[in-house]
Image 1: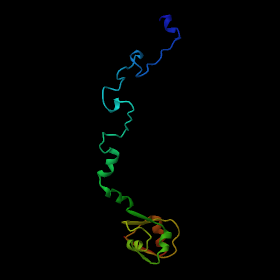
Image 2: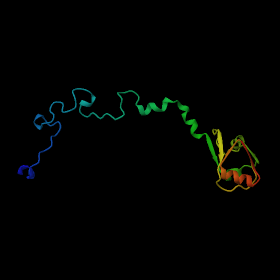
Image 3: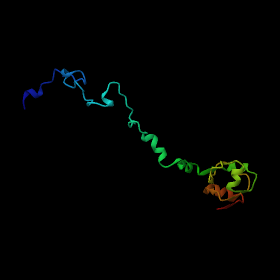
Length: 146
């Protein structure tokens, strides 16, 4: 091994500056922009999503599966025990919940969860029930039919 490998550097070389003439060692005429085109011109700021004027992918994707794809997002309504207390009826169905405006008419299903306290006996028909809510309803003498 030579002693020259152990000598520390005392000079640094400047980095090549892009597009500052032929003498800079990097660039000159086109300086890495290619020859012609939108991105070769000065002041060109093309957004990342730009596709030459056609509708960008980010705007096309929502149309692929149709506009009805959001309907499944609000398929099940969540009911609490205090919601059941608001209804004066004892036999509760999905239609009676919609008529009393407890849930929105767009919901196709409903499920009762055990939040709050139930004060009366209720009979549920065609409404889903969680396990803890089922115990509380049946403890008050209520009936759950699927």
